[in-house]
Amino acid sequence: MKKTYLIIGLLLVLVISSNAQKKRDFFTMVKGDSLAMFLTESPSANEVYNIYRKSDTGFVLLTKNEPIRAIIDPTEARLLLGRDWTTISQAVDSDDEVEVMQQIKSKTFRGAILSLISNNAAKVAGRWFVDYNIKSGNSYTYKYIFKSMSGRVLDSLEKSIIAEQIIPDAPSDLKLTVGDKQIKLNWKYPKWKGDYGDLGFRYCIYRKDGNGKFKKVNDNIVMRDDNTEPEYDDLWLEEGKKYSYKVTIVDPIGNESQASNIETVLLEDKTPPSTVKNVWSTAYQDGMKISWNMSPELDAKGYNIFRSTGLKKTFKKINNQLIKVDTPFYMDSTVSEKKQYFYTVSAIDSSDNIGKRSNPSSVFLKDQFPPDAPTSLTHKLVNSTVQLNWKASTTKDLNGY
Image (cartoon, rainbow, N blue to C red; front, side, top):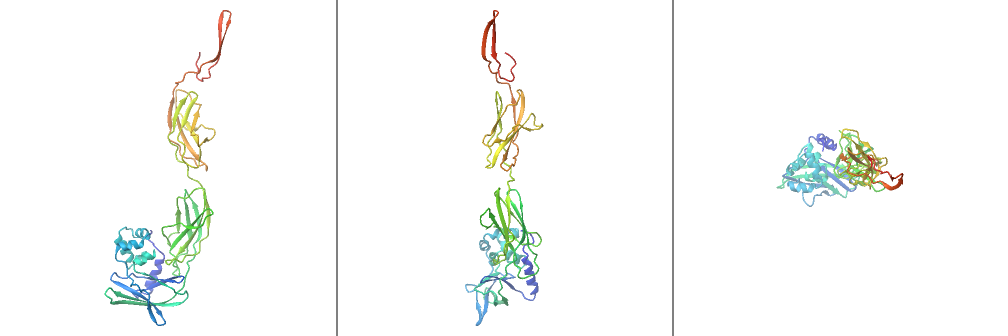
């Protein structure tokens, strides 16, 4: 994760600086009938707190089961973080449970940022509470009472808020760039301008395969960051398929924006077949048979074979037509005996991607075959002489009879 973690951190800076005379503060987020409360400062290890909401008859205790406190056991903190552990440990640049927990709970700007990465991180820091059954648009007054473990009151905080559900603005200008079995997404999002309602901080990337349904594809958190243009690389895709994408942004309580523009692209096959293996040759009387292992690629459609009389000389294609994929051999009838040849083979797929040529296979063609016998021998007597006649041998290097 980058050094600049969340634009929401700017919000915390303003909250803390604008309330410099107060030691503690909180801000709220609303979704449906739930109101999440986030402390801007993690409580100390030796203190707990209760939260009350004002009613017509006075303040009513909301934390009825037990007071809230920060997690003090590193192993418990890691278990609570669950799948968020990887993201947060990368942000802290440490895999040590104690250090990660201390960073989340630290009363620093960095600690506040780490706490906002997930609800579970905020719970580890003792900053998170959700009040249910509220009504959007109503005004509520909350009171925090902080106590020591022995029960002594240490501090209190009282604040009135309006429960207003704010949906983040949608990302815009989504663009796709096609690569090798991958698609890069780039989009735009407005920079933070000090608006307390602008709490979107992580993006959700949705993909639709062909005519299927959109599904969220990013397991890792894609953070909002004003210093860089947001992007995402969708890897290990299937070539020859159409893919559609859209992007949203979510706030810490789960309010999700409308989707960006939808973009669709055909992922063309740009991956060449693998290199042909095990090229070997066998000499026959009518030429040289070159064979190789059949290509394992599902989209391979054939082969080309190249020949040279020296490794440093030019290899020239000798097949006039593409050799079929299921016939991995070629008979070269244009060779001469007592000469060395080098052969190399490459596969080609249905998208005309050409694979790398195989390692050259060398062969020296020896003259190890006797000529074909003459045929149709006849004889006749001419002036006391026997005259013989026959059909000539078809052997190309015939020297005589």
